[in-house]
Length: 464
Image: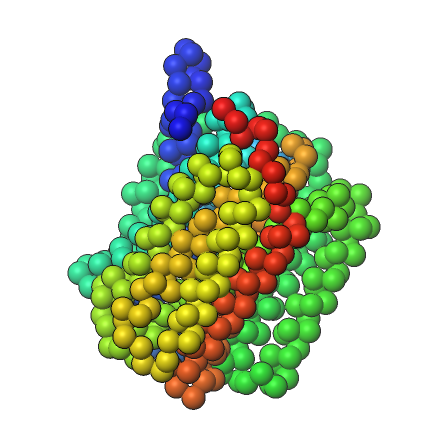
């Protein structure tokens, strides 16, 4: 394995500081997706939140993150990615402090929405800043791989760290831990990441941005409310219908716009659009599993938050190992075998959980959890590389925003639908098995799409 080639500083010395700065910001964003899962039952009890309120504490963050990613990417192109990235870190850190001080559930939900907006400013610029800091193809490829590995590290740390903090210092420290990371990330970025070029002439497609936000909010809101109101409720049906209308209107708008948020060539690319759907499906399966399993372990098995984090650790610990392994193998095998095999393995894992029975032994669940965590992360590197490789350099930010938007929609939908299935099932056990079966179906569908959309041959620019 070749050594990583860091970016050059003015004096010719090489530095890993830009990579550290960018990855610290991305780490916070992903950590806050998973760290909250083991804390929400405790938060719900202390703040007297309903199951729907608990879903919004978890899902409000991801739906705003998903809805505003394209806005964050567009602002980065127009105003400079470093500037917007730093704004995002500041907003995220201050919102985390507000979450920690929340006196009631509505305040916490509102602070989580603001935190999600800060995250949406961080994520699109992170890949653009790495591309700027590491222009050599081999170094850039490895930087992207390490950026992706941050998702695995954060996902691995989230449930266990959340359980530890909730059991010792209290649930508010789940948010306070972001403060020192945010301050360090901002300082590193300002001192070690060069200012980004601005494209002031590029107009922001505000109608398209608003349609994306509306579609994500309506879809997630309808799925959240279905657990309380029922699937046939007029508000739920109307929400789902309006979400579909907004999605269609977005596509029509992009065909008509002079300066579209997504170029038509990107929307028509099978590799890019198909892989974005794959990202949606595997996030749906993985984060839906984490949310429903966390509630099941605590409500059905009576585990504490810390014990729940330990119980989930086999699933999330595999993600870091799989990211590193897939980053090495993809240069030899290409992306398709890794994405397809990862999705098949994860699908079989959740199918195994669904078939394990009403009250299975914990040890029967370890292998399914490991398979789901490993398979998801094993496919992430190849999926990210496929998306970035399919987009022209001028649209790298838009491609990154599309892929990450799809993934966050998958996370939000997985949590919302998982919570709804738990709420409407005869009991937690049957609801959990149904949720796992849905996740398995999503993974297997992603495997079929990967066979059609992900290129089979290794790309030459991966060689060092």
